[in-house]
Image 1 (cartoon, rainbow, N blue to C red):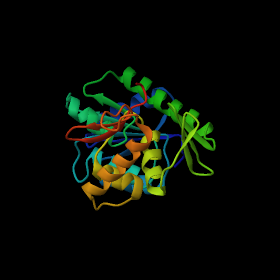
Image 2 (cartoon, rainbow, N blue to C red; image 1 turned 180 degrees about the horizontal axis):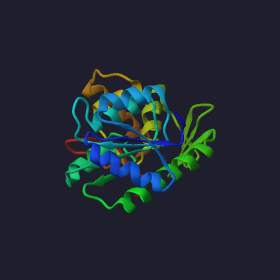
Image 3 (cartoon, helix red, strand yellow; image 1 turned 120 degrees about the vertical axis):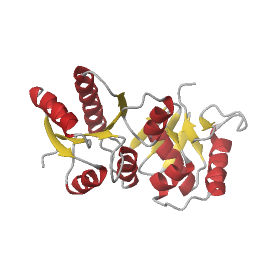
Length: 230
């Protein structure tokens, strides 16, 4: 399949048809999957510009598909669809690495605009990839694998840098300890104490007062988030 297609993943055929028809009118190609397992199979074979994922589906739900994508390094933009207008669902969806979230029912024009925006942002990012990752006061030299804060080098170990780089790539998103293990080290065995130790070490190097973090914050009951707006 061509890379300029959008993958529609929803177990309700009428919804897939409505979305496919709407995108066709906008001259945007689509492919379809009726459940999460079919979506994963298609993603293993082909690349897409955007994946639109329903959350509640048989066999494998949208969150499971999204987690699988991010765990293998697939950064294709993902737009989550849900029938639940629940703030926690939104937090969890974006924490798993989703790029956008719409609650059903939604207006087709909003979906089209959101899809276009996510595709455009992804294209700009892919064309602007350089040897440096810069966000807020932080800069990572991807060639030398060195991290700086306001031009002062941070003495990170390899694992600390991998964890911090991942958080820097996803500012504002909430990640559980399990997600960090899978995303950063592709490991499903979660050792709560180990993640806590790494977070504590990173804070000691980027925060003026590690007990009152400005950047690397704890989201109670969920996990951690890197804030760059303060």
